[in-house]
Length: 508
Ligand SMILES: Cc1cc2nc3c(=O)[nH]c(=O)nc-3n(C[C@H](O)[C@H](O)[C@H](O)COP(=O)(O)OP(=O)(O)OC[C@H]3O[C@@H](n4cnc5c(N)ncnc54)[C@H](O)[C@@H]3O)c2cc1C
Image (cartoon, rainbow, N blue to C red; front, side, top):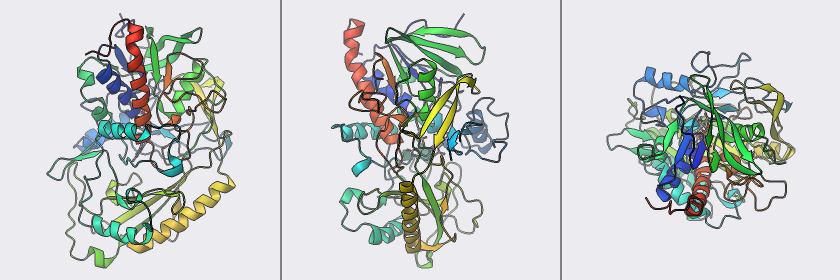
């Protein structure tokens, strides 16, 4: 007896923001479609896919983080034997992270309902200038829709007591003659304020909305082992129930692989779908960090209270210095330390909110030779072909990093006294924003994996989703864009549904 249906319309693999967006939009637009979501990791939170930061009890929260830390989750010490440390809720590639070049020693993933979206910081800036995908004319409308699905707002921490001062100081030196929407401003965050100082962080539960109660079925603890194809057309998926080891097939007309930018190409490779660009153009945003204690004239008189429960201390909030090709080709994230994904336990706790972290992200010089390959003769902890990362920074990257260090120090000095002698350059992979490995393109010319709807070239019914689709050099956080691309793909499939179900699946 299997817990899986024999036959559905659409299988979505992966329950992070991209997979959740596919399920939500398919259900909203074509309610009769039978959609299932498969997730190799367990349910961490309630409702499924809720952000773990919304779990008030610290022990329960830590348990939820541990449960998503990969094969054998919860058993291990959370650090690789070679001393590399993963951030809570994530796990590192145990080996193969530097098969060529410097590799991505900090490359990490999450395996749990919600994916990395159950642990993320929620920064959702829009791409600008050369970051944008120029061949998608409706990108802004899709970004609007992505903001709706993720519950993005710039208001949640905008009125923190020191936030306006931080923005004014930075704006005075960084705004120049930028267009209004690219000036220093509150960071759009996937966070909702509850009115009492508490914050609700959007995980994929917010993206799913009600669809898991309205007919879309979620199967946690379920590994997709192969996408099944016949004569270039998807026929279904072979899955393994990781709680019992039982294997079964689910027949499907459409399969969407939304399994993160390292494991989406892995599943395609395992399924024998190997277009030339698969795994290539891998990029992670090189990142520099520094921190300051805010100027005394800014701190004077500010009432800074520690946070409690799921509420953050109200300090300097989260500000955004947008990417600008000409004036500031970096994405700047300026955060009160307790909101930062890179904590600084070395800082004194005398005044919460008095310390601010500045993270400047660079766009990588994207090259085909930076890639994740998959072994024919070795497997990972789930039994899928083991990833092998070939990756290096170029001379262009070195120049961009040097310029980012200068820029972040200049910005830090405006705010107060830098705490470090020099900015810290984080190890490659630290951004957790891996892109390019299943990139979209306008033509099947060997430099892309999928078309602008996410359908893999030459395979009907097989779609990919997530940050891997982003073909441009971006410095800004990618999730909003990945969700916008998921909206686009799901809308396309929903529109075709009537034709292939023989009835109007778009009617509820
Ligand atoms: C600490 C932290 C902070 C971050 N901050 C930000 C931020 O501020 N802004 C931003 O834009 N991004 C941020 N990110 C990155 C963000 O979380 C990711 O961009 C986003 O989650 C990617 O969504 P996804 O759905 O493509 O993949 P994921 O969220 O990674 O989900 C993929 C899912 O697929 C599952 N899966 C993989 N293989 C299989 C298989 N074979 N079978 C079944 N299931 C499978 C995985 O278990 C996983 O749950 C952050 C990440 C972390 C960890």
